[in-house]
Amino acid sequence: VKPLNKTKIIKKRKHHPLRFQSDRFKRMNKGWRKPNGVDCRVRRKFSGSVKMPTIGSGSNKKTRHLIPSGFKKLLVRNEKEMELLLMNNRNYAAEISQRVSAVKRQAQ
Image 1 (cartoon, one colour):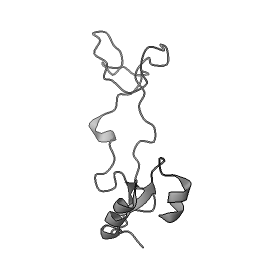
Image 2 (cartoon, helix red, strand yellow):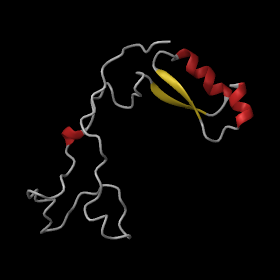
Image 3 (cartoon, helix red, strand yellow):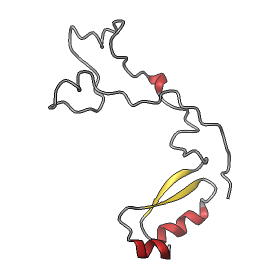
């Protein structure tokens, strides 16, 4: 089965932005947070400092969440959800959940 519309996926940014100074302190999470400090060089966009993610760093709306084959992932946990996939098999590809045992995977 081929996808409904195969458009070329262009990734503008390969890396996920890390939080400023999260590498220096264990108490800080790695996930991005906008710096709010008065003197923060990242917030003030000084040259040589970490680049802040902007609205333009997002991917194309049409190709967002697509896997390289051109489908979107659909997490399947049981047989009833597998039947749901039959109606949308041109848009979605099944990904069997981690919780499903090996015996039930063979059945699906």
